[in-house]
Image (cartoon, rainbow, N blue to C red; front, side, top):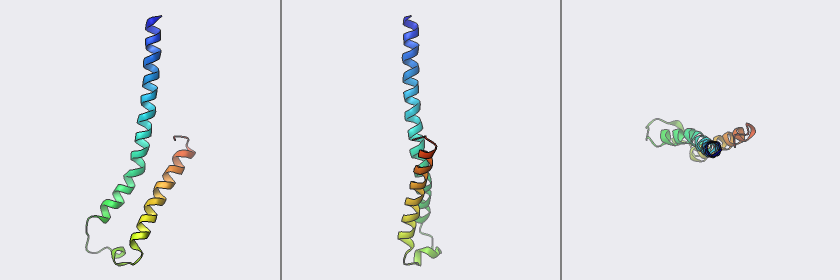
Length: 81
């Protein structure tokens, strides 16, 4: 009986750890494309048309926010969050 109780406890602890790992994977997935975009714009390329554009910086920020929000909405609809 004691062995069964220990198995139940370990199973519950494992399930909780799986939930935490799933949340961390979702957070990493949301920030991956944002980090990629920020990395490209941080490379100091000489010929990037949007660098000379007056609205380039705000548009990229809006695109990054839209990507983050759309991924959050997607994960919520899939009931992963």
